[in-house]
Image (cartoon, rainbow, N blue to C red; front, side):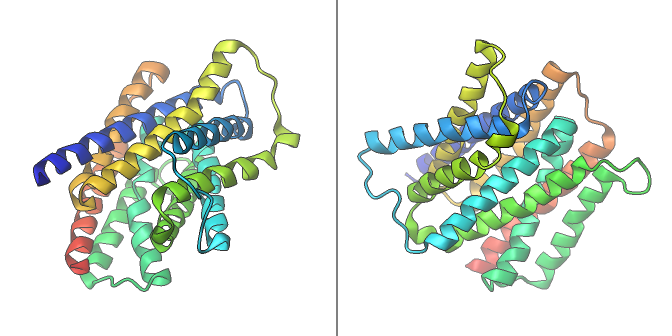
Length: 287
């Protein structure tokens, strides 16, 4: 039974990784035709409709209920801000570089966990966090190559995404589906604020279909992630999340003729190795 749950968790996470990666390659492609705010707005509409329809079919009730609406709204704003920043970074960076830099998120989560949730962080984990951040330096190579401000978009996106994850822990009693519904609604409202200034006309039906699919892929990615972490321990399945680098590299090569350089691959390897070590140490300290 345990093995069955583990296998299910891994499969769910691999599906989540596939849908997240497919969403991101579409965003990078569509950003050549539409501005980022318009892309996120359309994505948020379809995602909200898909999540609402799913919960309605599942006969879920009170999916807007929360014990702490201010924190839920702030969590949704963190999700929206992370999405905007990451998509801007993705537009201006190679896919493999954006993916590699995003792997810094687990280390930032550990820092926020220590500062906000008073979680214990041992000396070993602090050392692992510092060594993990060195992967970012390998990728960006400050002072060696010309600095690209898109690096900052992805790194700040990782900060807001980490806040989003920490607040998810804080609000776990609200339930995963409630958090998904509320964050989808907040993202729609948040992105709608920019639409009067950044509205784009639909160029053709094929691009509009791609835009609409973004919300479906995002909803499926988050749903399968919830299923994955519900099926088995995070320490077992979380390392598989790094396999998104394969999809990013493959998509980048096929659609944009991108080939990651050795520094990107080395920095990614550093972030992945120390990310897994950090996760294992966290599990051991928590037990």
